[in-house]
Length: 402
Image (cartoon, helix red, strand yellow):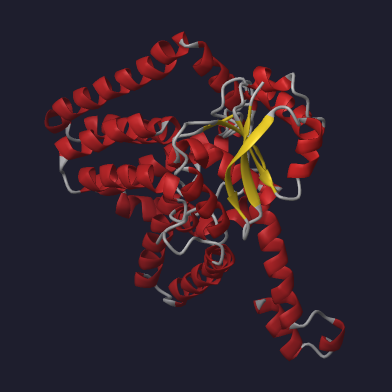
């Protein structure tokens, strides 16, 4: 956009170049495409706070960091334990950040952190035992873990700059001897460097460990690398501004500001679909209405969800969370034996057959008014009664028997 303004204003051949407005539109289109290019994993923390299901462990993560920064060690250990309990990816990341930081601190304040390091190592051991020994005794959990490991969400190096923008090169300046010499002597900055190094390693372990199969590197993203990089970038700007010439700091600030609209643009396009009842990200109003109303049905159901693609995933994933009901196939990673269930559900939705009802274990079908006649003609003896119907939304829940 900036280049467009300059070329349009100063080039004698400006009429042959893209105008500023056209470049802006091109930027918006490519930004949106790039965001979806890495699967909506949301590199920036700013975008992640819109997801209510993830805000919980974001809060625990940052509460732990803040407690250690302010020397509230018992509380820091508590929040570390809770984060490990709340989310395996975030728990592993935080566990490693704190452990790496304390190992570094051992060389500076050995006598002061002995008890803290011991407590953290106990939490580390519990986390590793629970996730790698205890849970693996369950065959459904082994299925879930195999599915998680089978999906490799990576960020190609070519998309690093589109993803992190000016934050990345500015933060890398913090690794230069001049800046490092100023920041490293303080414990809180050593924690920050430990955070960046650990998060970068996990975010790109497909590059650092090419000999092993990646385990969803981007699942360690969600703003956990972007945030400390942004803090480092600001610290670098402060150092540059204090040096001569001051224009270096001003140029850096300009580069930083030019990256901020990406977050604003994404939010404007997203918030339009947010349910008004929720101050942070929730399902769309359409999905919220469905979840609220089917929860009023007294008898718990096992539901096959057949809704339009833009709503299907959200409703399927959140029915077990917000209602008393279960679904045939919910979240792709967290549904045991998801591939088998997905194939059976696909056959049922394409070629409904009463023999599939007991195989799926379904007791109800959630679909649209448009799709219901398709099922009625093929499952006439299995569809018994309407459990819920919303004419305005055009969605119906019908009981299914073998």
